[in-house]
Image 1 (cartoon, one colour):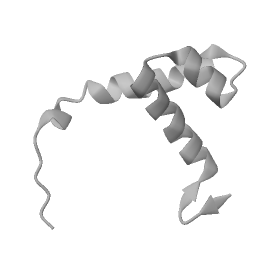
Image 2 (tube, rainbow, N blue to C red):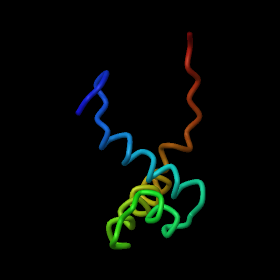
Image 3 (cartoon, rainbow, N blue to C red):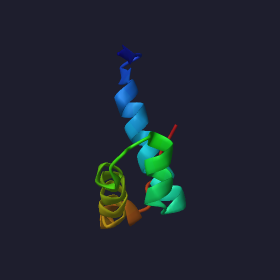
Length: 65
């Protein structure tokens, strides 16, 4: 189901990624999201680690209003 262009799956995925990013605890993500297999939750760790390896994110950007 979508509401305002966001699916519940996308919000759940964001929650998992942000939870792992904040805690670095894959078991916490697994328990919170209710995954029976840890490998399902491990995908969130991969996303966060890959995102932090992007050097372009270190470039300061100033947004004008």
